[in-house]
Image 1 (cartoon, rainbow, N blue to C red):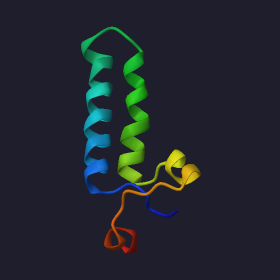
Image 2: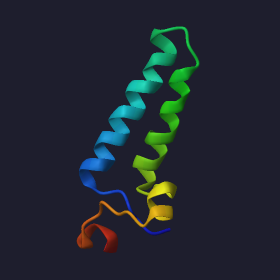
Image 3: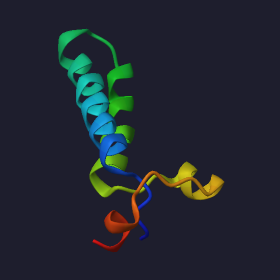
Image 4: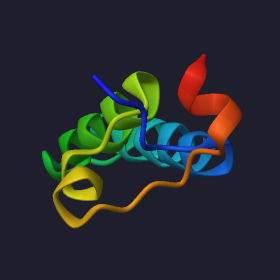
Length: 65
């Protein structure tokens, strides 16, 4: 799988995912489970919509690692 999520994008996705997931326990709603999506894309550094549209936020050095 080719990496297409760069450093800052990755950190923002992980933080947003964790914040949304915390809503599941803080507020009685199931909408917080949507936080799984940015969390997983941040951890795996791959975003399917980015691949579909040909977008990439990785630097050349990050793609090789």
